Image 1 (cartoon, chains in turn orange, yellow):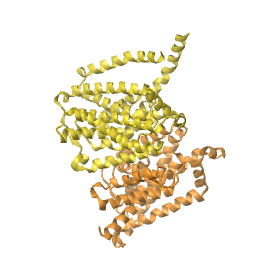
Image 2 (image 1 turned 90 degrees about the vertical axis):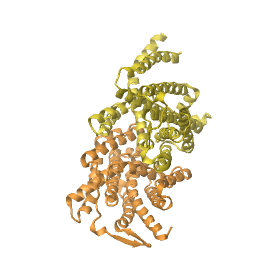
Image 3 (image 1 turned 180 degrees about the horizontal axis):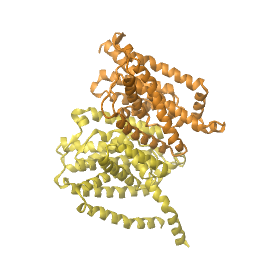
Image 4 (image 1 turned 120 degrees about the vertical axis):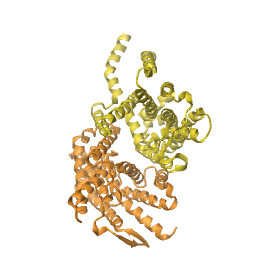
Amino acid sequence: MDFSAFSSQFLVGLSRAMILFVVCAGLSFVLGVLRVPNIAHGSLYMIGAFATFTLSKLIGGSAGFWIALILAPLLVALISLIAERALFCHLYQREHLMLLLFTFALMLIIGDLVKIVWGAEYRSVSAPPLLKGTVSLFGASLPRYNLFLIIIGPLVAIALWLFTNKTKIGKISRAAAVDREMVGVLGINVSWVFAVAFVIGCYLAGVGGALITPTVSITLGMDHSLIIEAFLIVIIGGLGNMWGALVGSLIFGVTQSLGVLIWPQFTIVFPYVAVVVVLLLRPKGLLKAVW
Amino acid sequence: MFNEVIRLKWFGPSIVIFLVLFILPSFIPRFYTYILALIYVTSLLAMSLNLVVGHGGMFQFHHGVFYGVGAYTVALMLTKTSLPMWTGFIAGPIVAAIIGFIIGWFCVRLTRLYFGMLQISLGSLIWAIVLRWYSFTGGDDGIHGVPIAPFLSSLNSSYYFILIVLVICLIVMYLILKSPFGNTLQAIRDNPQRCEAIGINVRRHQLIAIVIATFFGGLAGVLFVVLERSVFTDMLFWVLSLEIFIMCLLGGWFTFVGPIFGAAIIVALRTFVSIFTEYWTLILGVILILIIFFLPEGVMGYFQEIFKPRTKETVKEGTK
C-alpha cells in the first residue's frame, strides 16, 4: 500500500465524513432537544438533494449551484416547519415510541412524495466551475469539491457552536434538552423551542443533502442508506453532543474509505465493526451525552 | 378461577377460527391462500418480536436479522448440502437463536435507545456480510429455488404446515408468557430497578427472552422459505425490522394477539393497495399517522378498551 493511495483515500473519507457530520449534527440536535430519533431526517436530506438538482437546473449558469445550495435547505426547513406545526407538535406528551413511529410514517410519506415529484430516475449535479478539477495534497490528487467539503465541515461546526452557546434561543434549547419542565416553568414556550430546534435540525439535513449532490448520483433510497449511518454516528458520539457527531462522523467516514484499501469486498462492514467496538468499550458514546 | 374463565371464554372462538382457517383454502382462490399464508408467517415474526418489545420492554430494533438468518440457514443447508429437509428446519431457528444469544449478550448491558442502536449496528454487520459474501450467500441476488420436499411443495400443503406451526408456536408463547418467567419479564418491563432490588437477575431474564424471541423469529424465516422457496438480503435490512416493530405497535403491543392484527393489516395493505397504486407506502404512512392520532393503544388495545367496562360489570354481577 503506497502512501499516495492511502492519503487520497483518507482525504476522500474525510470529505465524506464532513457531509455526514452536517447531517448528523442536525439529527443530534433534534435528538438532544426533542429526545426523538427522527427517522425522517434522511428523507429531508433526500429532499435537499433533489431540490438542489431542480433549482440549479432552473436557475442555470455558474451561479445556479450556489443559489440552490442556499435555497434548497430553506425549502427543507419550510417543509419540516409545516410538518412540525401541523402534526408533530400535538404528540409531544405521548409515549416515546409513538413519536418514533410518527417520524417513520413521515419517512414513508416523504419517500413516496419524492417519487411522485421527481420520479425514479438517477439525477446528477455537476460541481460549479470554481470547484472543478483537482488539487494535489500530500502526494494525492483530490477533487477540488472534496477540499471544499473538508473546509465547510468545520465552518458548520463553528456556526453551530456559536448558535448553541452564544445566542439566546440556542441557550434556551440547550436548557430544554437538560430539563424541559424547568424551562417551561420559567415562562418560555417550550413548544416553540422544540419547533425551532426541529427546523434547525432539518435545515442541516437539507444542507447535507445539498452539499452531497456533486459527489454522488441523486436517487430514491439515498435516505435509507444514510439514516442508519447517521443514527449510529450520533450514538457512538454521544446523544445530542455536537462534537460527538463530529468524532463519530470522522470514525465512520474514514474507516469506510480506508476499508477499501484493506478488503474491498467487505468495505461496508468496516464502519459497523468500528461502531460495535466503540459501543462495547464506551456504551454511552465517546463524548458526554446530554441525556 | 378468573384465569380459567378467560381461558374458557377464548378457547371456543379460537377453535372455531382455527377450523375456519383450516377449511378456507378449499373455497378461496389460490392468491388469497397465498396471502393468508404470508400473513401467518409475518404474524409469527411479529409475535416473536412482541415477546421482547411488548412484554419485555426492550427496544429490539433489528429483529429482521434473525428472520433472515433463519431463512438463510435453511436455504443454504438445502441448496449446498444433501442433508434431509427437517434438519434444515431445526437448524434455522437454532442458528437464529445462537446469533440472538451473541447479539443479545452484548445488547442487554445497555438500555432503551442504546440497546436498540447497538442491535442495529450488530445486525447491520450481519446484513453487510450476507450482502457482500457473494460466493456463499449469493449477495443481493439472494437464493432462489430452494428444494422443498414434495409433500410440502403445493401451496395448500405449505399453507397447512405454516398454519399448524403458527398455532403450536402461539400456544407455546402463551404458556411462556403465563409462566413465572413471563410474569417476571413483564415485571422487568414495568420497573427494572425494583425487580433488581428484589433480587431478579434482570439481564439474564432479558437475554433468555431475546433468545426465545429470536428462536421464533428464525422459525418464521424457515416458514417463509417453505412458502416462497427463496431468500433475499432485504429480509435482513433494517427497514423490514422497523416494519415488524410497527406491526406490534399498530396491533397493540401490550396485548397478546395484537401483533397478528398488525401483521395482517400491513401485509393486506401492501398487497391490495399496491394493486391500485405504486405509492402504497404513502397510503401506509397516512394510515399510520391516523392510527397514532386516533388509536394510540393500537387496534387490539382499542377493542380491549371498548370491551373492558362490560367485562368488569359481568365480574361484579358474578360475585354478588
